[in-house]
Length: 260
Ligand SMILES: [Zn+2]
Ligand SMILES: [Zn+2]
Image (cartoon, rainbow, N blue to C red; front, top):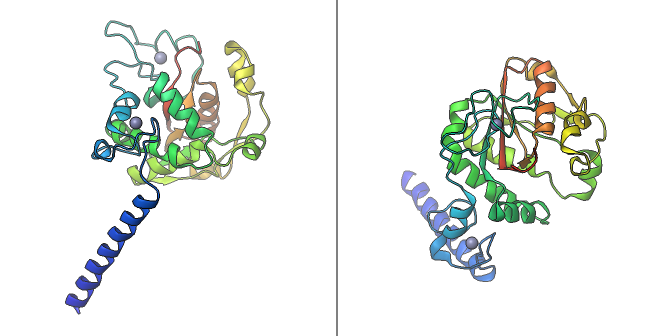
């Protein structure tokens, strides 16, 4: 009996590798960022990026602000936030990101966001988990919650990048992702069209919580694709905390530093 099941297991694995080889032949692998097809450089990398692109995307951030995640110089003061967040009423507690919104990460995030498939976003989320897993695990989240899109945005896009990233992080951390708890209560003006100073006001009371008892006393990892001023995530965190959330860390692919 044992012999039969080990034989069928081996046969299954052989079939799977034949299937994968056939798929690779019909749809050769290409890097999600530079479109090179250098299979060798892909080995040992996370997501679907070649080694060069992975280096450009997953940045080494030796010093960062504990409050907003901004990369800082070694002598910058960040005791009560940093130059990028000190004057802002941010309500989340800390932020983890793959990197600052530089040329490579910007290109990768935008092309993944507007793609027909969510595969590019999932690849970036894989990188985020691989390169920041220690920080994410140490936070010890009970629940992963993506920032929801408004219904108007949902009509235009095929998927919510925040939900895709949240699913990847939740699987890696072994906790539940829930995209139904947090919801948009009203339409807000697109943040890009509002001055940086008014973005916090623009988001006020824009979120609601379903089944508040589920989040009560929980440590939440709130997920979005990009954070600029932090106004959207801050309002989401404020709403969650009104419903008893104990702490809220934000996880994003990229932190934009020019949105002061
Ligand atoms: Zn590449
Ligand atoms: Zn800061």
